[in-house]
Amino acid sequence: MNEHEGIIIKTINYSDSSKILYLLTPHGMQSLLAKGAKKIKSPIRHLTLSLTKISFNKSKSANLPFLLNGDVIDDYEMIKKDLEMQTFAGHIFEVVYKMSNELDYQRLYDFISKILDEFILTKDPEFMTFVFELKFLYLMGLAPVFGRCVECDSNERVGFDVYKGGMVCQNHVSRFTVKDSNVIVGLYKLYQYQYDGVFNIDRRQTRLIIDQYYEHYLNYRSKSRDLLNNIIGY
Ligand SMILES: [Zn+2]
Image 1: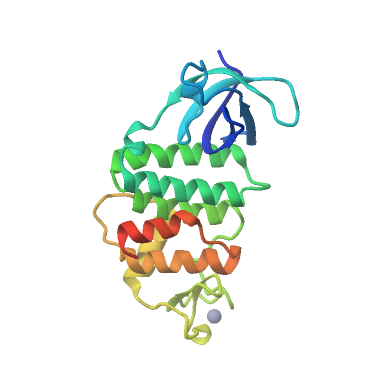
Image 2: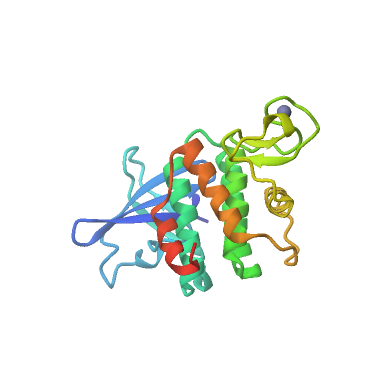
């Protein structure tokens, strides 16, 4: 039995033969030095690829512990082999790497594990990425308000407004308010994570709203987002 568990979300080269790994674990982010991991014969080489869930043991050093040994729990081979899935996963990992401080890591870890499994089950990484992005806003305390007008608590809701942070009533619409009920219901279902594989979402419009949300509240756009643009066209 290995002592720790995590998902490798980023790696960087360190010297000619070593790598630094960044793992999302149930207890927080963990950096590890994988000494000699780039050598063909390294016994830890298979444990050091990005997008791999491993269990592992590490040295005691507090700063940058060595990865000592471990086992692959899931190599997410299907995701690695599919450019689109891989790019969506890369986008999710970038967001997590940049944003996750002071979060409930156990929840985040379980959630990311589930999202990656669903990538494979649903073969719909775009849909699952929307689910991730909306739920991640919730984990960060930035969840959109759906149940009432975000400005005045009115039950009347006529549209969704990114810059106000949720639904708005007739008195609080702005020129940025989206009134297309199909888009709004889609956002809500994604937020609640109801995948029935059937309901239609306007993917382009949903992408736009979520991008605006992240850019407005977190001032953030991932590099993978631009790669995605090349693949999916928006
Ligand atoms: Zn209002």
